[in-house]
Length: 120
Image (cartoon, rainbow, N blue to C red):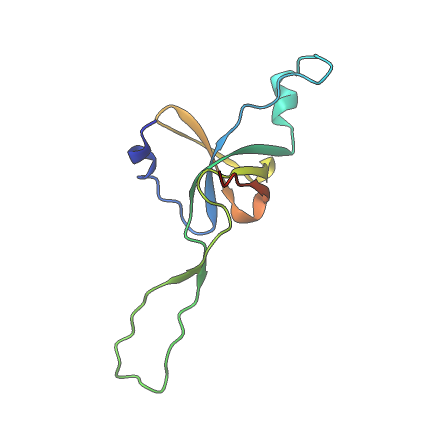
C-alpha cells in the first residue's frame, strides 16, 4: 500500500493503528489449528502503522487577566508506541477495519501489553 494513502488516516486520541500479523496456524508439534481457535486467542501482535496524538491535557485559564484572548491550543501527553514497533496487544479491545483491501486494527493505548522496537 502507498504510504501517502496511510498518512491520510488520522488516528484520534489515545488510539493506535496496527497492521496485524498472521495468526499461528499450527502448533509446535505440527497440528493445524482451525480458524475458530485462532480468533479466540486473547493476545495478538502486529506492527504499529500510526499513532494518535495522546491523552489531552485540559487548558489552564488565567483568571487574573480576563482581557487577554485565550488561545485554545490543545496539548497532549504523547503515547509510547512509534511507527514500526512490534506491539503485543489484547485482542478483545481491538476494532477491525479495512482500508484499500487491507485489514487493520485500531486499539486503545491501554490495550498494548508489550512493544518491541528495533533501533537498527
